[in-house]
Length: 67
Image 1 (cartoon, rainbow, N blue to C red):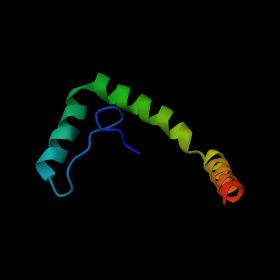
Image 2: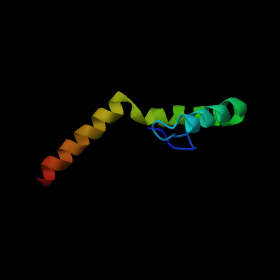
Image 3: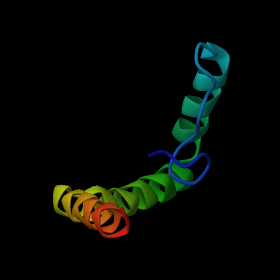
Image 4: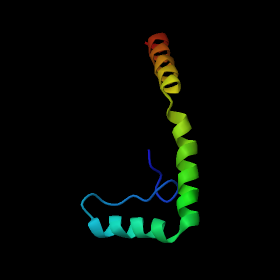
């Protein structure tokens, strides 16, 4: 999941100018690109298959125990 101005820039669907502006910012500012890249990789660690399965299992257990 992208976090606007933390891991990437969000642009409105169909807004080509906004998308081009976001891409240009990343091309022009290598430190910003590196910062976003590092944060995005770190955030991606939260979305491993094992973690998602564990969270889903916990949700099922919670629902079954409170149902």
